[in-house]
Image (cartoon, rainbow, N blue to C red):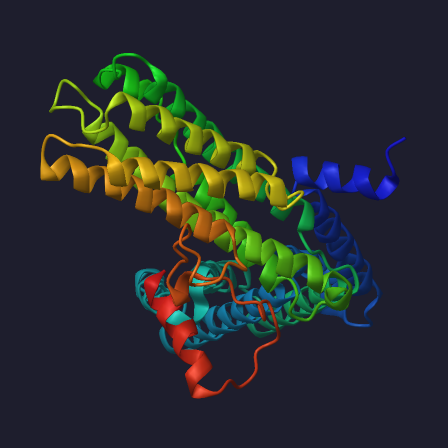
Length: 396
């Protein structure tokens, strides 16, 4: 029987917006109820701005909820103040509308507002056109009740925080599966008596980049969800494991894409002479199969020592065969060496604990390696340790 916790994870992985939708509904209902209970006549007249503020401020993480709520409320206040100022100076003539729209559009482009800048223009027009009799009271109600809704939404997010572990695990599985399938297709192509033509190779290509970008976005959201989250301590180890696995798979994805392009170029008989002979093609296919088998189990069982040892042994055989093979040109020898190096980089990316002197693994550059201390709350770091962080940021 499937446990309730496991069933909940599966549901959230399949419909990731369920949690956000539930928190948004709760926030809007609470904000509406509080606004109706306020002993303020304006709140009785415009109570719907409170749930509007809750909806505007509801995001998937506590940190993003606070940040976007602050931006949205600031934009609303700026729009209201701008409208009141324009109405006071220019009245309500036809000329005030284009001037107000012009000024509000410029102000909405302030970098601080981010994606909330449109509220400047929206509120400015609403205050100008919908508050003919009491513009100051209308603007005050709009700003105050929206702020109330934002505070309620932030409070609900803080009390019912979400850490998208299910989505993070699903994203890891999706990328590992996509990479494994791509490697298996390449291995099948190498095993044919005659290398496939351009059309057949094109049919074996898989779109890995969107899956990789989806994993990166999910990983960053998961790490961001720890800030201000009362459940962060209980899930920190799991998030760190996902972080290490995610960075490793991103590195492998880059190497697999490079390897795919290389094999399609040098194993295309229509474009040039095939670089890898039959023996090397068969052994390369064996290494690809071992790597695909490792990825099919990654990171659920971390691949297992047996899978890693099998991959390392196959790489040793391929390296020995490449070193002793005879090639028609020096370019073919360099090509074969590039294929072996790409496979070694894949092993080095997955073996996060590999020693730098392992002859069969090429570890990623320091700024591409997982940081075992991430995710963690921001704190001051010694200059030497921050170097790799800045390098990795620039690399992205």
